Length: 389
Image (cartoon, rainbow, N blue to C red):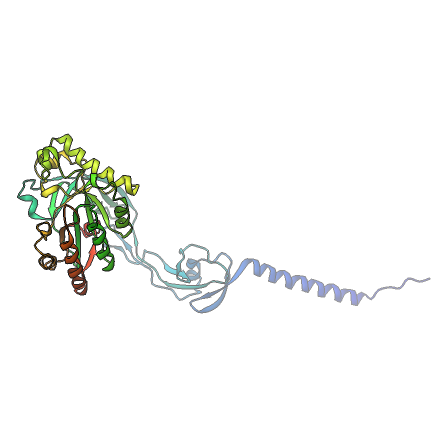
């Protein structure tokens, strides 16, 4: 029986078609593996898989942008057009000039940015200085804020351009001078710091907190340490309201201080007055309080400042003395509160006797001040405004 022979022409046609299919497929496969689709400045293009912003410019795919300039370290022009070739962003995110562009990205190519020459950098310490403030009794009244600073060295950076040879210096961290500085805050904002001494006290401290809460006000309480026991709930409530709890010493300078002047105490007794006052607050709130003191009677001068330097960061006096302890009448106390200016520290008392006039005066004055645009902040918040310029 004779074998059937195939059709040579038909076989050749099939082979040809197969080769074409493989070739075309290979072409598109190679094209897919070696190119990518982009939208560049709103125009769809197909580019090499490894395309970068630089290659788009150099290959003429985008109109040549204006290159940036090369600048010297001092900001002067070193050479025109030698900065970044172009800029590139994808959805607002900056892309490096030589960074590969992800496939299917919508990229914006624009003018190049200026660049700074390479430079050598050297850092030097700026030693702090000591400011000699007036530590006399009369000097105390030159301001309500009395800062005791240990000082901190600053840092200066010197840059020398490798091409230009030019040098620039920059203070990267200012030195903080040590010393005793006296000032009253002068903020642009209408803020004042209400302060209360000699508490906590039965009834009056709670009533004052009620008035503060009703008027969306914060205050700073300078507490007597040995009076805190039994009034822990008042201290906690004040802190929860955002008020600041500071010390007015442990027992208001009793004993050798005569109940008014820690300056008459020994250095050891002075330190104990302050540190025991801090500890009494910490025992209630569970954290160390700010090292902020109001000395009884404003008696913070001379050797007392040196003796307490390591224990006090700020001693707080006052700008407005309501003299509420004299009990001149609620209206009179309210009138004195209403004399405030922005940045003032106002002195009042929540302890040491009947403070019902103080409570009533606050009820009268705070709404009026609020209507004038005043806000009532803590001493810490007042300190954030810094010294007047």
